[in-house]
Image (cartoon, rainbow, N blue to C red; front, side, top):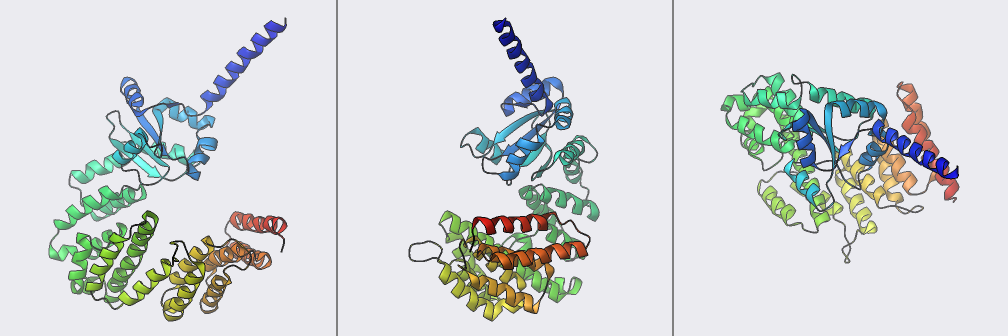
Length: 407
């Protein structure tokens, strides 16, 4: 009798486990296997490109993919496969092959492994199903847009939608390649139209690219159609953030040769803001003799820079303060950053700056001040009829931290 009960319970457990597994998306084990099944069943392939460290990837794996409504939709229409892109094996190579640049990348392929549609970033169940519906629509998916572009459609609104779609999907390499070819085929007059400049901004063309070099060399043409102030600010901002990203990559890789070489080219262009940018990047690279971040040196350089240039661009204060917050982890360790934010808010009391002010304050364990800021952020949300969930979360976080780390 006991044996019968044991066998019965075991069978029920297996049946129950099978039912639970069937509720969510069923993933096969390799792209080759997925392709074989897709060809056999005349289905598209859904690929989840993920990494072990990606928080949105983990959220989707735990909370979205297992849901019954998601499984019912995907298992009926797609062959699904998960590919880990940090496993130092086949997944890494597949990530490179499909130009995966962000995680998770959610991609839909046809049975011949052509990209039909893709996006990057975590989605909840409803959004994931809507994405799959869009990918399944041959009149609206990315493959349709690509085919229409390749067939020669150059209507401005279509081109704008085409490039925006590629950029949102982190297919910037294809977007850039297609735009450079398109730009090269335009006449001198067409290159300087408002429509072409709008596309250049959609693609966020970067310094040292062919279109950007053309813009610099033909500024007067763009002045007439776009306006001098707009063109000059576009060029200046492009260099500022281009070098910030380039320096960040160089510091991470411990190789600043590319940054240094490009800065040398930048200097030869003799822009009046070169010295300003050079000092800014010196602040960002505040390392001590041991090669590690020197917080005191960073604050000293940051204060000197903001005193000289801070009023020209609020983003300087926001960026430098946020980075300083990342380096902070004890009571009053970097109150200089709090002072930076208070000086900014005194001259420009923009509600959106409170997020950075809140961050640097709680990172310095100033719980009461942080709580006041969080309360103000909630009041602003209520006044603008916005969701208060983030503000409520911040308030509770500070209350918990205040208990855990009493001063």
